[in-house]
Length: 137
Image 1 (tube, rainbow, N blue to C red):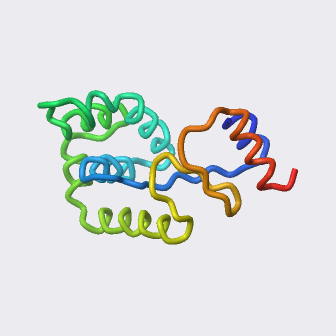
Image 2 (image 1 turned 90 degrees about the horizontal axis):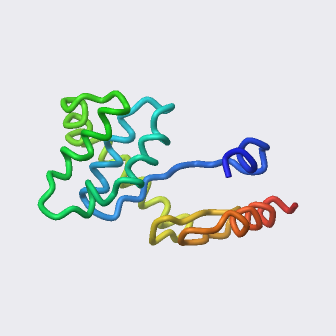
Image 3 (image 1 turned 90 degrees about the vertical axis):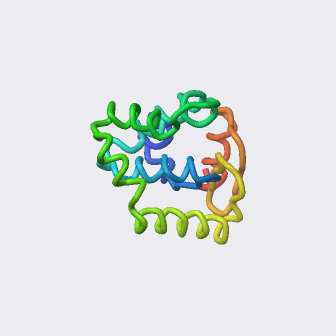
């Protein structure tokens, strides 16, 4: 997708946080505390390891997030500071509210193609088709 759609200028990808619970909000805060060039990789690692930090019973969820953040260069103190940052928390929640209001987003993942909102995971062919329809190609 990035190579064939973003790299060729057919689409622009914008990541918006849409935390559905307090743990997802904490993870989003940690992600936003990273340098911009590390954000997408960190989000990818979080999504790939949700079984360890989001769904594991009895796990220290924040410690698991901190382990992943350490790979991206954040110390535990920086993770804790990001999670405690009320301004960052407020900005993420305001962004979620804006997505709800502007695009009627109610679940993740959701994708916006022009003015069309499509919830759920999409196979590449369908995604590319929607990009083409939104661009008029």
